[in-house]
Length: 352
Ligand SMILES: NC(=O)N[C@@H](CC(=O)O)C(=O)O
Image (cartoon, rainbow, N blue to C red; front, side, top):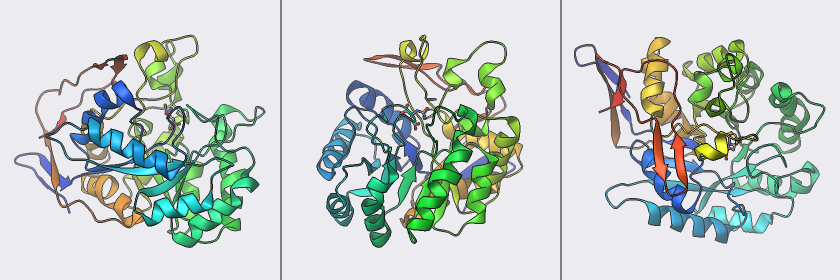
């Protein structure tokens, strides 16, 4: 339920969740966690640490570190995931799911993105795990890009659907899959052509930038993320999907903090840090598309429906003011400064 008042220009929605989040570890975790916990009740926590979160024991220890890093005056529920490797033990996955510890398993094709070296190269080797997951109803989250060197980086998502995802889904009936951070019309169309066992997260930044923002007039390292932003027609397809009200699309920010030296280097890291300003940016985007009434579905309701969890009873109010809201350019961490995603336009929404 959401309601907007023309008088106060406020929008109140159930407290949102982030269905794809990188919190990292140690000092970085401590610095970035409050940026998410301020606005979000829960998040699916990505397991691509170094070393990755592969076993149930490792996920339990990581969850404890997250909760220990949470400021006393904040509440937040980390929804843990396991990083799928070719050696993942189906029994360990089933036990971690049965205990309520994990809510998904994450598939990284080996070499596709940050800390994905331990991911999967031979998909036949994970067949047993995927069959167990289909049996127990545990969702698979996919980083949907092939890594073949002959496939252009802008085509990697579309090729992944044809060569990897669709064959996996056909071979594993009943497997529930989330296509993470989709960036193409191909992915949005694939989702809508399938049944409700398939969902997709969409990031805030992919609703705002296309590849011109990244490359025209000089390279913008803070807009570099994976999957890389695509052509404008794809951004518009994502906007249409996110604002459509279709329950299979929900928010996963993929907020992925890297320090500025790691972004602004000859070989810069991929990732946009959107946790601090995501909800105001989404209000801007949904208002621009005359779809403010769909924001609650996208950010607060569709994700819980897919993951079979209750919608949060707490609420979040967004408020539109007359002058542009000033967001911090950077946050400081003990590892260095982390730049906050700059949408490149004035934003008048803030969290009340
Ligand atoms: N999205 C990114 O560009 N980077 C993510 C990894 C990922 O989700 O691909 C990261 O961990 O930095």
